Structure formats: C-alpha cells, structure tokens
Figure (cartoon, rainbow, N blue to C red):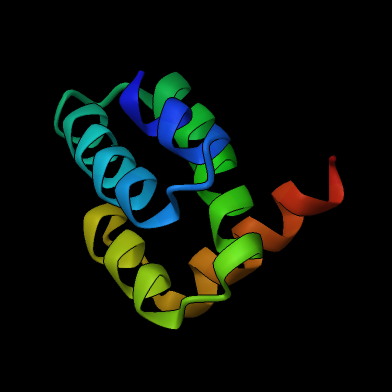
Length: 80
C-alpha cells in the first residue's frame, strides 16, 4: 500500500494523502475492519505530525468531531 510505504520512508504528507483516500473508500464500502486498521496507521501519522488539520480531514471522512478523532487516536496510541 502506497500510504504505508510513504509512512515508512518518512514522507508524511504523501502518506496522509494516500491513507485518507483509502479511508474514504473503506468508509464508502462500510468496511469496519479496514476502517479500524487505517485508523491505527493514521493515529501513528498524527502522533508524528501533530497536524490539527489532519484531524479535521479524518473527522470529515468519518462523520465524527475532531475531538472524537483525537480521543480515538490517543486510545490507539496507548495500545502501542
């Protein structure tokens, strides 16, 4: 997956773009499993970037508030 490759190589902006597109697709197809997987990857990217706009983009795709996305990402970060 291009998003993972970009994350591994430190290309966070490219990783964000690719993974947000993937998230949108999984949300459209109601694939809860892979939405969860992508959330974990996005949480790592957020932790590295601390980009508040990124949270807003994720929230928009998921239909959540920014605060709910932040809480979810914090929960996922605790599991690592």
